[in-house]
Image (cartoon, rainbow, N blue to C red; front, side):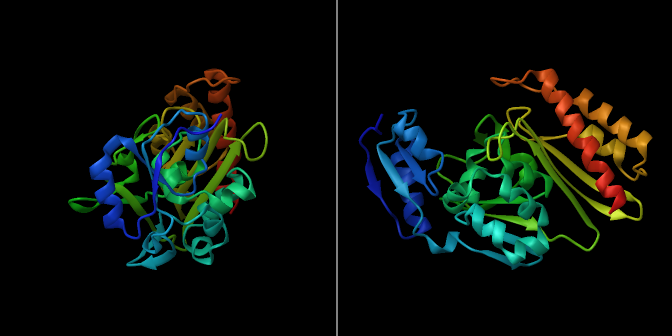
Length: 285
């Protein structure tokens, strides 16, 4: 099947993009990496009248450190993040997660902003952004606004972005010397969407962890923070008894959605397995 006919425009500035979004509303779609959009166009799941190609906007690219945060432009590709020395130093969770995203050809084209805005609950970047306590920067006709990751993902493939807003970048707190992180996922094949995945961060204080953020992907309509389990683990020594309690806590606080091949009980069990494997790495580091 081929895509339905549409008009195409490649603006040179963010202001031009915003103007087009206001003019065309839901009849327009944004093209960045195209890894999701091209498939939906060709299957006619999306039939926009106008395709707005934002890949020529240089200000939306790049990775930099600004004012004690790591700023990732919306058009930074998955490979840009994977290979960035700044990411490796200041947000190593992202470098660890990147190789799990699809395959090299897709990582070379797919973008950070596209993944965050599309908000697939089984995707790596939304879960990582939430685990890192990041912030989304959106620009609309009334200027810029910052949206905390905790408030950004509102439902299945839906976010706090307004129809006339453009995600231009994200900001992530810089990892300190006491930073701890963990990432793991289970998929049928490497590169597939996760059946269940987990991204976690915290602050080491001796033999315990503080300020934990444990996020699951692939279990609900959005990435899910396991706040009950975070609270249970706060400041606790990660011995066998504590890890066992945490696994039981996590399994009790989530209510996974099934997919085509996995039941809620399977996903609940696998989420516990990931936590059981991850926590001892923090204790032994």
